[in-house]
Figure 1 (cartoon, helix red, strand yellow):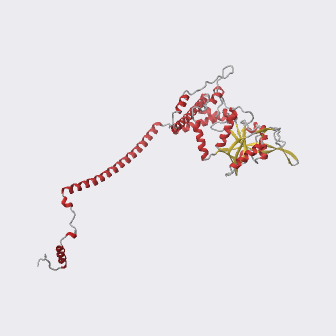
Figure 2 (cartoon, rainbow, N blue to C red):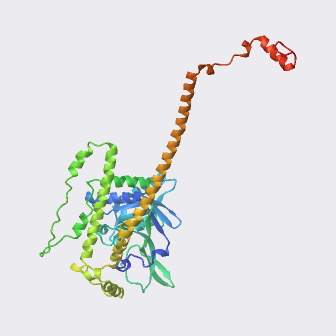
Figure 3 (cartoon, helix red, strand yellow):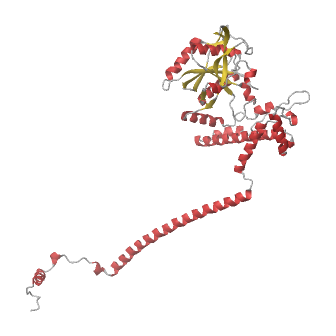
Length: 444
């Protein structure tokens, strides 16, 4: 159902008209989630209200930090304690000067239909005294029960405040103290504060990614909440008297053993164990979701899963406005879910191809080619090592042969007689012979 038809505070204009986009940082989401968890588990009274700190660049609003607010009760309803809030916002401004962060909006809990009239006093207070265009980050507690938030979508919606002109032809809406009077062509018209949904996306820096990864690893222990506990609460079987049967509690028998084992492990072993536990929890979650899909498909009529013509005719009928038929137990046929399941099955073909024989043949051929290249590389390295060994052997053998020859013929190894020890008469005879004169060794 269109939210604008069920909630009079939702504007009729589209979010694309303003061009605004919100950028949510994980740190702000973790802060809001922690505040909601503590408030719920401690059974605290009063609404959950907090402020959002960030910055606005052009048409993008980033939400970097969040903190809870102190509330007061006034004649118009619940509002924020102004003195306390001003001091707290100023503290954030003093700390976050580069880049400069300021108040950009607030957060609270709302139903999936959108903000309610008791949320208007707080928004008007922030709008008039602290921020020109605050945004509203609305968390939906009923979204955790699986109503409308599937496929990993966060149970939250971001709104911006807008004022729309209400004429005489406009549908009647609940009056509020925030109505403004505007004169157009001599007639008085009301300008009422409404909320318009904004698109958003998650954006994180390197430091936030490291922090979120650390939190995710710390959460991967046996004491983590069972993922199918909420699913079991939704699908509790009931007897004929209308009383729901109590679901059996699922306990991990190895939890005590794992705690005793952690006391005898080093820090590195604990880190590896935590990583393995997170993988185990992820596999359990995948198994539970696959089981949920199987239960949904089994509840549908059999011909919808086997007869393509019947499925196409039902799809055409649903597009023409007729209500879709129901399966076993009154389960309505949801074609977007069926298309999503079919898309997952198409992706499975990449993991396990239909033609297994051809795939195995191609994989064997590729494996043989890689093995052959690896064998040729090994042979090349072996030939290089043999070449080096042969060169070193020749060097060693040459030195050994020279040493053996010198040991058998020591005279060949004696040094020649120095020139200073030769007889001077021999030197003079050699000199006369070189000049052509007769000496003692001349033939004439």
